[in-house]
Length: 450
Image (cartoon, rainbow, N blue to C red):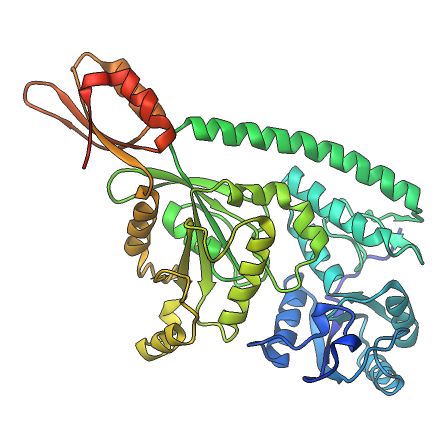
């Protein structure tokens, strides 16, 4: 059994970034390249934020600009020696490299630093491992972690730590160290995939049952820590965890929300995106992200006050495109500019000027913290849903309770009035595929609105 670390692990975050203008041939992975609209300092700050998200004590941060990548250690000898001295002097236990490391580079740096070394993918996997609460989330993260470890069988690895969550690079209670070979990993991956297929079928049945109920689905997407969960809580009055922390939300949450004219929607809060999100995590969470693909409206929530707001938008749109949602042509997308309380009118105007709006409609500007603009957002959602949906006015006899119940189960009931003669006037909205069943059910009682 490994030692339980009583105090917060002292960590050092290193940003090894290629100098601007360096030949692309020198960069084996996108994580090294200069990112348009994002400074080296902001990239390092985000990596430190990831470390803080799992309560690491970030004792030191360093940016190292590289002119080339060393196959053995990533960094040059001089940098390795300098960092090793600093790590020893400051009693650093964990070194986080904000990039992708090969297994050989990771092993060689650990020898040189005499400390545990993880890369950006390993850190994100650790965060996801600690945050997953549902059975599905835990399985998805474990599958991604096994895929990551499968390529790193050059040394022993630490298996899942069950009692505390996470993947145990810090140690923990009840943790067991397993010498894993490829066969054992593949067997475990096969079992997890089999379990996830069952989860996927169940989720598909849930979606099918929701489609049978006339509530459109509105999905929240966006960069991690953009304020999605705070906005979700404001709109639904739910108690979803909403913290100023990267990846505070991992498991999807669904709640019902009422719109201004009486309609209702199901709002879905999803995992946040981030730059250089490991491909294995995108693949593992594809079943969960199908909630986004099936949504009637997709709200792209942006932290418009963030210095890297445009770069974050690009990252999110790239991930959406990879999932099959075209950020340019998909009519379901609606941008929500959150945290407007942190900006004055001049800075908002500057943000608008600096954004490429060629293919996007005007965003909705809100503050999930103060509630500013939420009425506008509800109205914008309703307008989005109204496109392509058809409105009908239906008259029902007072005794036709079954007909009224059918409307509540198969259409969006926008308004209901009972006249003096007892006749019930109901205004409903339905998608095109439900028009014919409605007409067959009510025939002469239904009048299409202009």
